[in-house]
Amino acid sequence: MVLFAIRKQKLPIFLAGCLMLLLLGLIATFSRNKPSSSEVTEPADTELAALSIYRHAHKVKGCYVILIRNSELDGIVSTITQIENTFNSKFDYPFVFFNDEPFTDKFKSTVASLTKSRVLFGLLNSTMWGYPDFIDQKYAAECRKSMTELGIPYASSESYRHMCRFQSGFFFRHPLLDEFDYYWRLEPYVDYYCQIDYDVFRFMKDNKKKYGFNIAYKEHIETVPTLWQTVMNFLDEYPDIARKLPSRNESLIDFVTDDDGQSYNTCHFWSNFEVGDLSLWRSEAYLKLFDYLDKSGGFFYERWGDAPVHSIAAAILLKKSEFHFFNDIGYRHTSYTHCPVGDAFRTKCSCDPNNNFDFNTELSCYSKYKAAVHAPH
Image 1 (tube, helix red, strand yellow):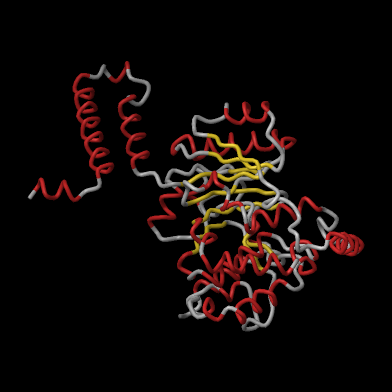
Image 2 (cartoon, helix red, strand yellow; image 1 turned 45 degrees about the vertical axis):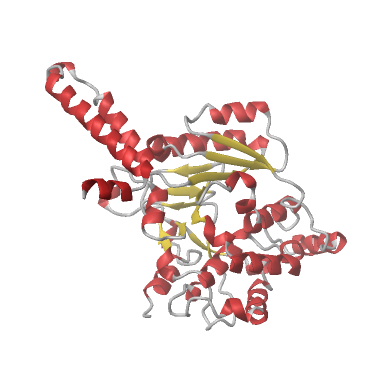
């Protein structure tokens, strides 16, 4: 019976178990022969090795995804240093960098020196970063000018629009991500404040979570005036997809609309911190939705951001149980901070809990998220 049970196990798990037993035996031997307490100042190397092997045996296929310019090197050095200090030195997940221009040798050598993990560098092609053939570039320029006159943020920027389109529909299709199932989006010039002692990717997998965030924000409606209606048109034109969606009570649609789906309330998850299951974006439903949105021209004729696109899509495609609010990950981007509240976090986090964007009733959509999650089925 024992032999039969062993044969039914997957070989990598069996080998990992053998290694763990061997190392535990070494630890026990070491403990019987260790020096007196006055001579021991560090944890035993064998204990750390055993913990490292255990963690690696239980890793999932996750990575960090960073879209960045060479000129933002200082900003990403700070981010990686903090991620290593708070999380990755314990779990050793790889970093995947994307750029629409070749990375410099200085950039590559500098970021690689900050971690013991794998570091991959990818160049974006013209399909992923550029104007598709169906976009009228002259009209797009006129739209940018009109939006600039209205004072809309990033109204004049072409690169911002390319970025939003790439993050909405292409990052997960890059060949460098083919081996991965989960991603954690990183940005330059941000701060991570809290020690994270559990494997975030493993948590996502074990708990069947597909989208994680820690700041919910309100979008400038002037940037997405037709986005909601375009999504609704898609559902009307693809009834086969609409029929397969979670029911209204199962989904998080009430996070993004206040009037039973008539309009968009501008709430979205701030995607500069985003932990997700890549199967969401690789799904047939999302690929068809993105293609529909892309061909409508809204990324260039308006200024659709990847955050509202991701948020609306996830709210429609996923069940509310598949979302997760990472309250325990303290994070700052620009002038907005999420800092965990509660005595349990004060020894783990260096941020001020009074400086918490969740309390901003004018701009934060966190309370809207909570209400949508806890709405009765």
